[in-house]
Image 1 (cartoon, rainbow, N blue to C red):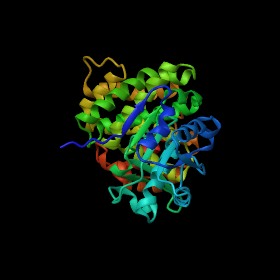
Image 2: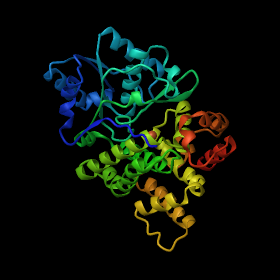
Image 3: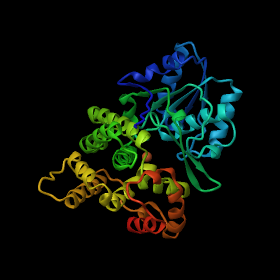
Image 4: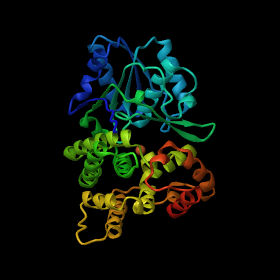
Length: 380
Ligand SMILES: [Fe+2]
């Protein structure tokens, strides 16, 4: 039995102008827009706001967000939603804004503390209408049933998974990606590739998710480099937006693996870009996981453009791994944890917390705390 959930997707240039009409169609009258300062400065939030006003809606704007959003930010956002008597949530931004938008929508009807919903399927009451406009095409939050929130007290990024968090409408406008820096394009692009590879080899993968994961891997191989190379390469940006969408649909339904479990744990202790941590950990985890899904690693190598005819599964897996390493070098991603500022002394606590992350459940190879530590030492 397979289950596959996804929102209504509106994709294409100019689709950002549909945000207000989308909220109106869902019955909204007063919308809480959740966005960050960078996206506001780029002018995208104003476009969304105007589209709401044009659709006859009133709006309230919440922008108190950090790069790795916290429980306190979710509470502040929820309080504004309730105080301003909103009836729909519209996220405009990267993963941080969209995750807070979802978490605030969750608390607005379910109450309690965001910690109460950590893990899989703890949401019991319906959420208000949720519309998401992604500005990074990386996190996949605009289509996924995930929200990732930092619990500063426990120094832990919580993974909240529930079908209730799947937005009603996801708007992907490739035009919006033109203001993204090369640095962020590289980081979010490698997050997309990690989503695709982890969901493809996940033990919860199925034919419905594989289609999306495979498409995303191939698109990343073909378009991530040109997308980083030039902000004006519109075709590459559009293809990476499609890759992000495919990868988001794949991982939302097949979940992820050890790279993300480790990335969430490191992200609870260090203010690194999520995609950068994935970029460093991905080849190490691929090496560890390869024996668990040899046929799939051969397919990954082929999708990345490697010729694997006449090669053993082991040799094909090695090609896939070295391709991923080369891609990270080509686009200037960080290559070691130490280079990012990670301290070796954090390894025991990071290893312990990684094992508790919901993403570890679907990793294709069973993994112990010692093995996570070994991967972290290799990545130093
Ligand atoms: Fe991710």
